[in-house]
Image 1 (cartoon, helix red, strand yellow):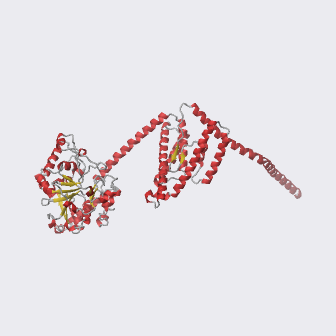
Image 2 (cartoon, rainbow, N blue to C red):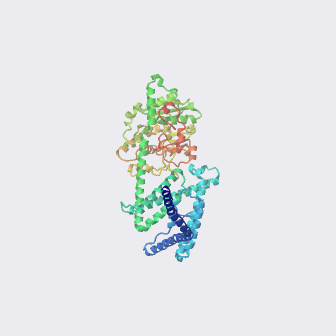
Image 3 (cartoon, rainbow, N blue to C red):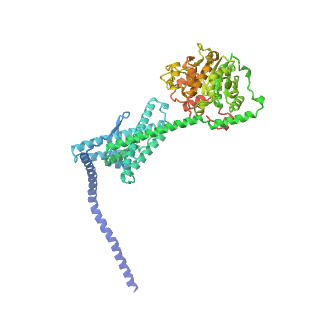
Length: 630
């Protein structure tokens, strides 16, 4: 019985083995016979499909052009003269687009060469099937592709060689002149590519406008994706001063997408209208941003920085902690000595006064002969006094006065200087117009140099006292030079349409600048020019004779009473003009930050701030505690 069961098991297992292994052997033999013949036929079928598809697409494209009333614009080949080759950003063949989508940033130049060889072989086989017209089109496409590959390889080589210089962003710092040229050349290529990509984004957004809202078609997705990719490449170029290796591919892909969109929306007039509307809208936004920026700059100019406010408060607290006898500055017996060099500055800014005094004293040969008269208001008198008590300028003499102590101002001239019709404190400030009362403020002096508080003295200016004033009252630098940004005319600030103004003054007279002025106080008193100023000040309250500020009143008051100084005495424009030449600044005896961009503000022009900050004691404990840094 056991023997019978064993035989049955062996028979069942044998039949099972035959049923399993027999089909395997049969099909493997069959596949072996078919593989050799089938592989060749399958490869031939694929190659025929590839080339026939490309040929059919080109023939279809030709038929569409002949059937349309409107002719598409010619594909543009952008040339770079520096590279000596043309770069085509508008190749729209289907196999090029597919290649640009599949290609990654890690593609190698050897693989590109193989692809070019395959493409050339495919083009040769297509020429035998297409007509002569199609052959010409293929030849131009082949030329554009070769130029593109050549330009791309040269561009990549140049970028790799000069990547470090481009990241620094300054071609002028390259050590070798040839390297400078290559660096600037590569930077120019990057700039041109970025400009082209920006144009592509604008065109793509214009096409998106034509598509009805809510549409989620393949073209919409492709346009949005292309916009994102190109904008990302632009952002990288702006951030790193360089372009990634895939940027050219993204540009080609975007151009192919734009070509598809142009075939869907062939109405050129609608595109022109949309682009013009976008340009007008962009211009309006730019103008709005400029107006807003100008407004914010003027707001910043009127506002006291937090650090300066903190410094004034600390100095004021320290001043009132002193005993009355400890608040006296030294050398006060020299204040009326006419043999000394007297300077005046009217300001409510502690740091500004400190810079004017420090720069003047440090550049003079005889500091013991310098007397500085600082006039401020009662709020800032303690702070400015305490500053110079703690930081006295060596052998020079300092006098601090308050405008509120001039009781004769309201009684003699019947004015408080508070009637200015402007909300800008720079114009409504009493200190701004106090300069017209210099002979009354300093009755014992014969000459004085008046400084605005936004100036820096760069060399010894004691030679000013030896200048022949020729019987004039005011010595100043003229500002009517036509080749400069600080060109001014009398009618820019004075209303010559008023009969009184037109009768008394001539519009072609060359005006001059406040900021560094030499005044002959004896001649001023003799001609009583303060009364003339006061007369026109009162007339200006009744009718518009000039724009707000003290400068137009100064032109009227000292009309035909000003002697022109050499321009090297006074350089202007550092508070609003970023194009002042460095040579003019360094040669000037006094530089002036006239304008709203004062050097103590965050909106100051950076390239000029160093001339001012070198005279600020940033290591002073009070400046450190108030976070005032250079």
